[in-house]
Length: 282
Image 1 (cartoon, rainbow, N blue to C red):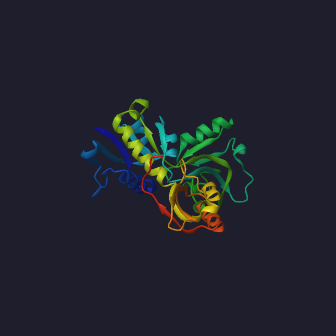
Image 2 (cartoon, one colour; image 1 turned 90 degrees about the horizontal axis):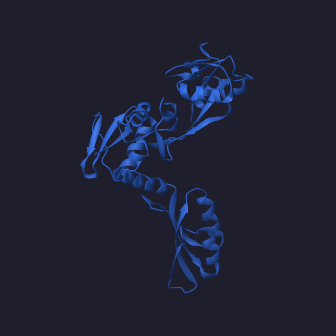
């Protein structure tokens, strides 16, 4: 039976559970149970702390897991990243007191507070900087005010928490993070059950990037419309009762879709409808 780890709490837990359920697996918990068996798919799900998942997977206890890229990279032995999932996005960045002239290249001899020690130490080493890394488990942003550190390194989403603490980000992001699927190794990734899981999940991730667009267009403007909505291979074009018009159906990327719909309308398209899709194989 394939063993898969899912986050038991935190910002990644809800997104992971929803994604796996959409992929056709039974992983809903009725309480705080630590595991759930999906006999129909021959999978056992384990609900673990997001920070621990990379460790269990990389050590071969569990074949696959869903965690954050930052948490995986901070593990002493990171697991193999297999698939980016497109949710839980954040940046890992340095921050200093507002008004300070400190930049990452000036961190030599300074104290850097963080909850992700391995990521920070590797980044400082890459930069050739010798600094003291102060490990704290939470409320990293208050470390400077308490005199524990000169700067902090932390996961940044909106940045509001840092601003409230009187901090501003400096330098380029150390890394961009999001939810990912990790595997023990290539052998685990190649297991039939693992391949099925990855194929299904990838189908959901792809579907979330597209919408099905349908519209009617004069035949005289069809060539322009096809350029705007080329689809995967090509759009579906069907005749209408009016011989001067056709109906078009095409998969379109969500990104920039509003602009595409504006352009379709501008060349004469009518009845433009965009609909979400649940799963896809592209």
